[in-house]
Amino acid sequence: MEKILVIGAAGQIGSELVLSLRKIHGSNNVFATDIKQAPNDVIESGPFETLDVMDDKRLIHFVIRHKITQIYHLAAVLSGNAEKLPLQAWHINMQSLMNILDLAKVVDDVKKVFWPSSIAVFGKTTPKINTPQLTVTEPNTVYGISKLAGERWCEYFYNRYNVDVRSIRYPGLISYKTEAGGGTTDYAVEIFYEAILRGKYECFLKKNTTLPMMFMKDAIDATINLMEAPAKKISIHSSYNVGGISFAPKDVANEIKKRIPNFKITYKPDFRQAIAKTWPESIDDSLSCKEWNCNTKYNLSKLTDTMLNGIKEKFNN
Ligand code: AKB
Image 1 (tube, rainbow, N blue to C red):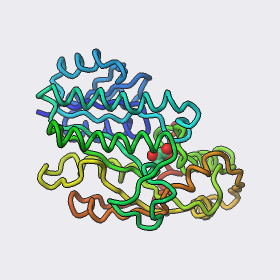
Image 2: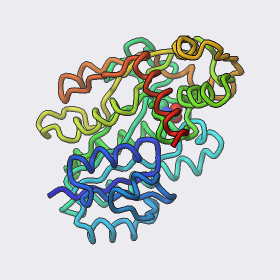
Image 3: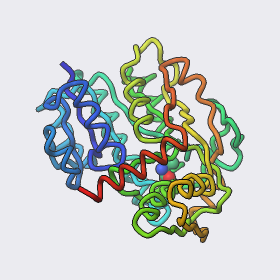
């Protein structure tokens, strides 16, 4: 029987991943944890506890007490917020991962670890179109540097201590269940909320800034497909490319206008434009799709319908 610990269960990925994992493994076998209160559906559908991944002693006590077999470590400071507090963000993003990897090395019950990397590991010297799995990675953001270092540590712990840690370089993730959390790609979440609530949106990126994105359901499915794949199928122990769909602010604005004709968008680039400029426009994820089936089901039209309907329903409730 798997006993799964999700760290960061109140966050954009964690709040949806918990629900999907509970459907597969049974509600009482998936322990949701965070330093802040999780959404009601997470708290009401199974165990939730306050747990700080930076507290290594409480963390190992929790893992041993509950006989945890898999850990999903989803807590991190995202790109925009990380630039405001560089050293604190570096410390949180790195020390939290080291706590998890070191624990997985010594606690025999822990068989698998998942940790999210990001397209942020790529920099301005990386090929921007169809970015390869193995390529130049020279990030110049705190978040990207921490994710690149994290990938190196994941591969080290696999090679040196046989820790089965798996990872995906997520593109920008889009969902309506939780509000945006300080990422450069989060304009693609805010725009839907603002379209419904105010009929207009001031975008902090330039209109032609194309980035790889993915609807959260596709990201959750990819994560579970990777974690369920037989170990012998896994050849990458740093982090896998996942491509999703690529679009720019003007593209998503046009999709919204088809559904909300009076929607107005303006553009006022801020510091996050400089971050976005260093990231790829599209990703080659052929290896991921070959090794563990990372197929994307949501195109921009379906994503737009789902986001607008989901937000309307959320506010109606
Ligand atoms: C961010 O924008 O910081 C994140 C990411 C691309 O990893 N959403």
